[in-house]
Length: 180
Image 1 (cartoon, rainbow, N blue to C red):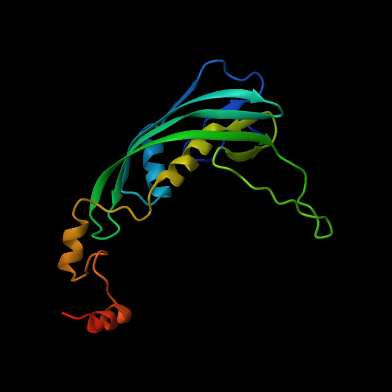
Image 2 (cartoon, helix red, strand yellow):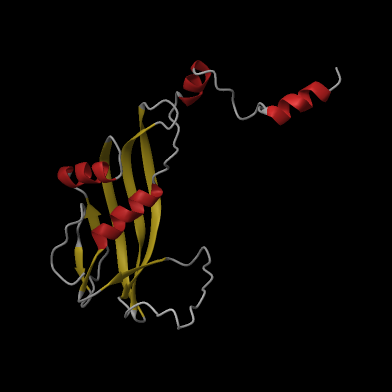
């Protein structure tokens, strides 16, 4: 980010120099929660809070902390709303924006990432938007196929059998081959 403002739903601009010495607390207000709910297609974001410590790590800034949120989500099966708690660790690396992308003539370097590697977020100028990074972390933590407490009943009402029962043409053929 190269300005003091951002248009994101949860903007918290942090200056690169000097970095805050204490952990940065980000808590979304009512308007921010409503905007985040709209962004992620949720009925509601009841609460969102993150506590993140920032430390210089070579030429980058390492952000480590926890994201706690209470959301209302629609069941992927029945469509009814249900409450979901999200408690996710945050591990991000803010890096200064690189130059232009390599041309087709230049060789690309392939890098293998391990579980311990963190997401890298580019910024330009003398500040970055920690709030937007937290909002993106929330979006990644939401299960798009979450099932509410009445999902099994909705399946049964719709005549959909459970995953534990084999179905399909192959299952029918195998059932016919089994001896009693």
